[in-house]
Each structure stands twice: as C-alpha cells, then as structure tokens.
Image (tube, rainbow, N blue to C red; front, side):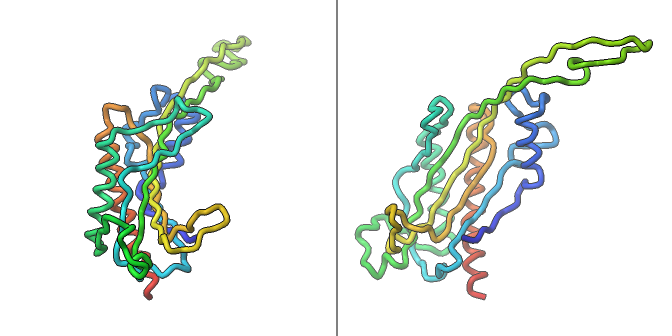
Length: 234
C-alpha cells in the first residue's frame, strides 16, 4: 500500500500531542492556545493499492449508516455522535464523489457482474475516544528540590503535584472497496484506497465546528483520490 497525505496542519501535530501529554499549561482539557487551533491538528491521508487500476471505476455506492469502532476494554471512553452528524458525513462523501464524476448507485445488489467490477463501495467508520492521562509534576520552581535559596542558604524539598490531562480524538475511515475482489483467508477484501481523517475533538458545545472540519477532510480525501488516479495514468 502506498500513501498520499494532505499535510494540512502537520508541522504542529506533534507539538499538540506532546503538549497534551506533558504540558501542564493544557491541564484544562488540552485546549489549543492562541497559536494552535483545532484545525492545526487535522490530517487527511489516502492509502491506496498501487497494483489496482483506479481508472476503471465509474460508479460508487454507500451504506446507510456509519460503523463505530469501539474500545471494548474502556467503554466509558467511547464517543458516538448524533445521527445528524453521521448523515452529514455520508451526504458530503456522496456529493464529492458525484462532483468528481462518479455515478451514484443506490442498490448494489441490482448491479450486473459487469457493472459491479466498475463500482466502488465505500463504507465509513469512526473511532472517537476520550483519553485521560495523569502524571506527577516535579517542576524546578515551585516544587522539586531547590538546593540554593537567595542568600546562599540550602533549600529543601518542595512537594510535587498531580496533573490531570484529558483530550478527545476522532478518526474517520473511508474504505473504497471493489466487492468483486477475492477475499483473504479471514474473509476480508483488500481496499482499493482508504481515506483517513484525523483530528482533535473540541468540547461537546463545538460539535458543529468539528463536523465542518471532518466534512472538509472528506472533501480533501476525494480530491486526493482523483489526483492519485491522474498520477497513475501518467
């Protein structure tokens, strides 16, 4: 599998993850500061099978719902969005594929074998979770061991303190599948192309802004796929 990535905000992604894990400045929910917005954490990637002929596909189909990937060991950390959120993402993907020149197929089962070979079925899935991180801070001042005080006197031990950090991340997957491809021993089909939209999720009161960012990510993925198809023809 090859990868093509839209580096929109990439230089700052490592910064925010580092700050979320280790920065006491972001204790209150890991909120981006004035120099770092939620949009700066967004990354769109396209992983594709370089052996597949991307140009042969003319139609596409979508499932009715989005599948949520859940953390079974920590169910309280799972995030599930409202139906309106899911419907908006499916509608965005549909609109972008049509704009890119693909014809929408409502019922895959009604396609002939010849038509199925030219169709991309694109299920969407979401993995959204809350992450909590607790650590003990031993800063030089205040806290920790401060050996010298003003006047040359020997200092003492300053007490450490507990820092609690929490943040929410969301990943949206779009798998472009050729349902006529041979399944592996696990009964799975190798994707023609997989789109991944990553980013931090803001507070629940800002769900609309996150939805807009994901919709933009879906749009960017379709454009990446079109670029890949053009590159393959060269």
